[in-house]
Image: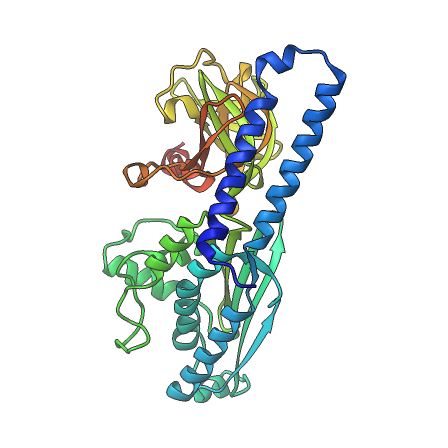
Length: 388
């Protein structure tokens, strides 16, 4: 039986609305004050049925990534003939399931990254032979679960990213200055800058300086991120980390003043009430927090969004340690309210550029809570923390 995808999307949206209404009823003050065993039992049964219905509705939109990987196999075969580079392609995890919308959105970024691996990553047979490698290159596409995410890895056994060349090109294009002291990982991230290319000549495959910036923008639009691991002479692996679904998120509910925020749990490392010895001040204001052997920048969420909060001392507040791509920061909030699964609502084009926010959600008390974007929140303090 074939079902129109729009009908399926409408069903998932309606189930999402049902979950929101069930949560609002559950937290209604009138019901909270009612002491009735049968009512409590029926409400618990309603919550179980609603969550099962939501889980089943979401699973109807899940598809294996096999078809997308098979498209990449055809692309690799065509490029191999065109470039004269023999390549052995290995596919693993083809049965890994993703949300249909995620699969549709990942197709173009994945295609561009495979093209880049074929053109930039894998060397010609002559150069491989000179480096003591087999003439046939190796390219691996794999998909697997990691935490609450799906990870798609594109690995080649080529020459790896040339850190010095990327740095020279970035300085020549005035993306960075010669005095900037960047780590290899930060230099690798420069390939995602608009207009950046290290190709000697422009080909129909690559070299125009467009593509990788679009890839990153598309991945981040899906609440995902890209990580790079590169070894000179041994190859490069790109990891695309994506959420299982774009419809719901498991989050930690935070209170800042009269506002509520949702922080996705996969970004949270720990939470703590800091002592005076842990908080380090720069020019009289708290700037860093020491968590065991690490100094982390402090971000006051009230200052970031211009909220009037009664709690000013970090030692009287709660610090939530958030992590993204190996970077960590301590986020100061008034209190932790609890853990909740929320239905993500887009904020529209007019709020698309708000840094640190990825969407909104209707909470159990009927109020709107903004869903925080960990990379955006951490990125707001990178310059200040370096200076500190």
